[in-house]
Length: 317
Image (cartoon, helix red, strand yellow):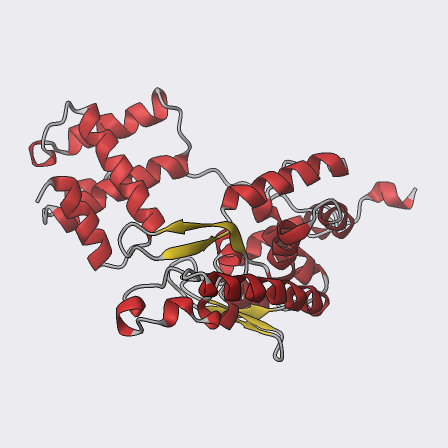
C-alpha cells in the first residue's frame, strides 16, 4: 500500500476524525514535497527541523499551525512507520501566545442576532444559548434535542467526547417550528426515494434503514441533496459552516459592532455571561466540555468588571 494510503488507513483504524485525517495527510504531503519526495524513512530530526523552521520563517504560520504539522509528523513516524520517535518528541514545540478571547456584550449579541434570519439565525442562537462550537451546532441530529428536559446532547464533540448542555428556554418554540418544516421536507424526500443521511462509524451496516429514519436527520439540514458515491444513496447534508460564517460576518458589519468576532465568539460570550451571572466555574466547564478547568478560567479575565475586577479610582471623582 502506498504511504498516504497507509496513513489514512491507520487514522481510520484509530478513529481519528475526518477533519484530522484531512489535515494530517496535507501536512505529510507538504513535508514530503519539501524534501523532494524522499521517503520519510530516509529523513531524520534535521529534516523535520528544517521543515518546521521553514513554516515559521518563510511561511510565517502561527504557533498552533506549526504544532499541528509536528503532530502529523509524530503520527507518521510513530504510528504509520512504527519508528521510535524519541528524537522527534524532543523537538521544541512553538510557544502559543496567550490571547484573551473576543467577547460580545449581551446588547452586542442581540444586535448581531437581530440582523440574521432563517436557519442561520436559529443556528447562531443555539451556539450562543448552549455554548456550542460551530460544527457541534451544525451536526446536531433530531434525536439529540430533548425539549422536555431542555437539554442538548453533544455526540463525539472535541476529543471525541459526549456531553450534555442546556437548551435555552426562549429558543424551544422556534426550534420546534423549524423541525416541523424539516420533517415535512424529509417526508417529501423519502417519498421521492431519497431522505438518507450519513451515519457515524459502522451504524449503516448494523442498522441498514436508520439513515432514512427521522431521529437521525440533521436538525439544520442543507437545502440541496447529493448522491453519495460509495452507497449511491441520495442524501441531504447539514448546512455548510461557510453558510453560517458568511451570514454572521454580514450581520456583524451591519450591526456596527466594532469587534473582530466570529461564530466561535458566541461560545466565548456564553461562558463569560454565565460567569458574570454568578454561576460556578465548574458548571461552566461541564457545559463547555473543557477537559481542564484552567481552560475555562480564561473567561474570568474578560468579565465585565474592569481589568482584574478592580474599580478604577477615576470612577470616584
